Length: 501
Image (cartoon, rainbow, N blue to C red; front, side, top):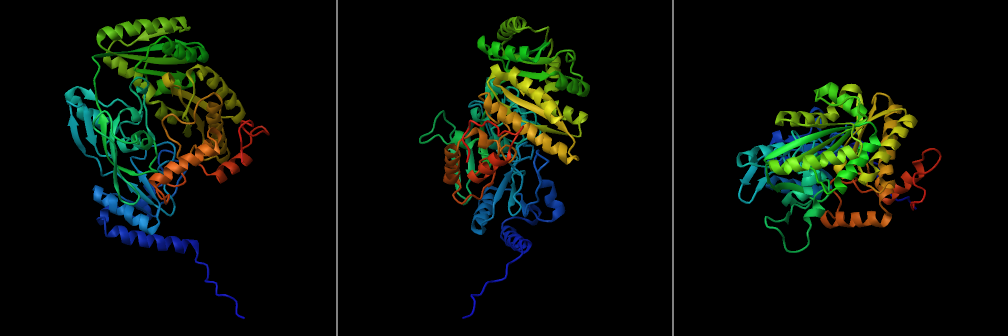
């Protein structure tokens, strides 16, 4: 009896070439040649987002110009079983837009029209490729602006902001992206048009808008967004307060909120961060302080004057060694320029830096900063700290040399321990940067298997086949089991009281 015929195994690179050819043929019938990139030199710029340590070349990059093209592209990829990674400006810091090796990058860079600004309804309807700050620039004529202001607002796009639920220095008073979006129009993996939210204050049925915002491109591809606009405040002033101890500064943040004061912005930097920033932008920061707080009040002149007085009293009672109030608009912007340039300032003092993003209860700010100081000694790496102190959103910047593999591995372990310490202190592993691939292992620490299964169930409701941005944000049970076995510090698994598989 003859043995059954077994076909010869096709080499992996041959299978990849076959998939690539099928994809290019399908997309070539949809897009102009200039909107479809497939040569190595053309796709390399898309190999990563702001998390540049992780890179991968996609099969191709599509740059559609119309919603109809987006529909046809997604439908074609669905038929071919090819994964799709939506991409905005690529400023994200969690690897959410990193390509899949055998997938397509779908860039919305050409969707950059501001479709409508309605000063009466105080809304703006824009395409996803519109830059965050461009919305405020378009609304300025009417005395309005868009409140969420990430540090990357001159470059990041509203579609990316929706994907990551971005925040900014004024998110304490005015909220994150999710609090400032009324409606989103998007295309599912099968090419179906869906809308979430409405132009009114409410919408019939389930409120899926909040579920969609922050979904990191895993549910559908955004093609249109309607945002809320708010009036520009008549006046604004910033207090710059110095502290001789970082824990005093952290406790002052909690004291301000406890006093019933909700500043427009409440940011904190430790001494190493302040020094790095001052050398870069010369904002007039106190270089002797162990920590400085920037606390902004806005509203009518009378409201601002009263709030500045009350906040100053709280800061003095909390141990502030110096208090300086901005005396002009230019000085206010100068104070903020330092905080908003903290990341590039870090780039001046280190070959590379790793920006973390965790959130903790405000009362634990001092505790986390002390723990980070201990980690610096153990990992033999410097870390400068800047953060949205008002809502406990921390952004430690771990400084390292990416050309040294050992330093990079230590930086990754350092970052993971910071995130897991946030969970231990009652917080979460992200505040505004998203999970992507950067924090996917730390999701195993924060959420139980049942919770992660529920996340996957929501993902399947939007994308049953799992082709939209796969292997991002939600870890599988197998990944968590492997992480639990391998991730050991000091001979102990982190948080041994948590259930593992």
